[in-house]
Image 1 (tube, rainbow, N blue to C red):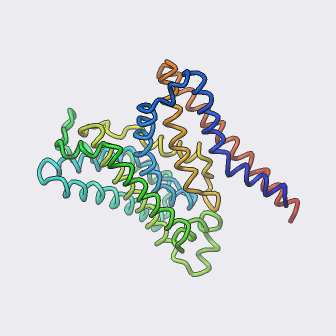
Image 2 (image 1 turned 30 degrees about the vertical axis):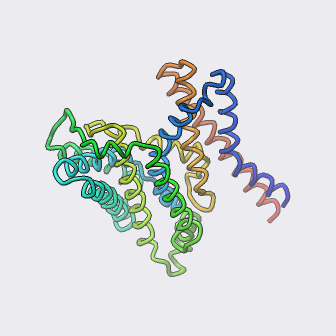
Image 3 (image 1 turned 180 degrees about the vertical axis):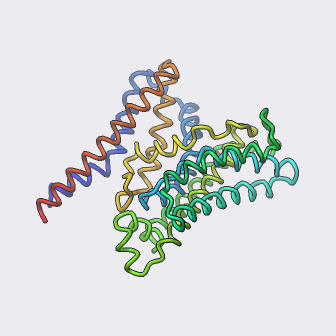
Length: 318
C-alpha cells in the first residue's frame, strides 16, 4: 500500500518535476535570461490563451474522448467576431465569438453522443468544415480582415490574467465539487456503469463538448486581439498546443480520475517555457519542433509507465 501511495505521488508530481527540470536547463543555457521580468511576462501571455481553451477540453478529456477542433474553431469564431465587431461593436462581437464556440461544441457533442460517431473522427471532420466556414464568414476574403482597436485592447495581461483566474476557479469548482464533474470522470472510468446507474450519459457528453467549444470561443477572442485580425490561417496549429498541454501535463488519454486541472495548466506553461527557452538559446524552428516532439514522447512515456506501475502494485495488493 505504501509503495502504491508513493508511486501515485510521483505520478501526480511528474508535470511539476518536468517543468522544474526544463526551468533549470534553460536557466543554465540562457545564462539566466529566462528569468528576465519582461521575458516571464511573454511566457505568461503565450500561455493564457492555451489555458483558456484547455479548461473546456478538461471535461472532454475526462470522458476519455477527443476534441481537436480548437484551431479551426478559433479561425471560424474569430472570423465571425471580426465581422460582427466591424458592423455592430464590441459587446455583440464578444457574444458572437462565444456563441460560435458554444454552438460548435454542442454540435460536435450531439454527433458524438447521439449519433455514436467516434469523437476523433467527428472532430476531425469539424476541423475541416470550420476552416471552410471561417472563409465563408469573411465573405470569401483570403487576405483577411482587421479588427477595430477596441478588440486589440483585450491583448493585455492585466485583462487576460484576471479572466483566466476567474475561469480557473469556476472550472475547478464545477469539475471537482459538482456531480457533473464527477459524472465526466466516471464516464471515463466506466461508461456502462454510469449509464446503468440511471445517469443521462448522452446529456453529460453533449454538455462536456459544449463547454469545450465555449472556452475555445473565449480563447478565440483573445487570440483575435493578439493577432489584430482574422485570416484563413488564424488559429492554425492551436489544437496541437492544447493537446500537448494535456499530454505533457500527464492527463491520461483514456480519461477518468487521472484527469486533473493542474496538470493541464502546468502542461500549458511547459509548452510556452520550452518554446521561449529554445528561442533564447538560438535554436531554429526545425530544432524547436523536434525537441517539442521528443519532450512530448518522453512525458507521455513517463506518465504511462508510472500509471502501469501503480496498476501493477494495485493488482498485487488486491
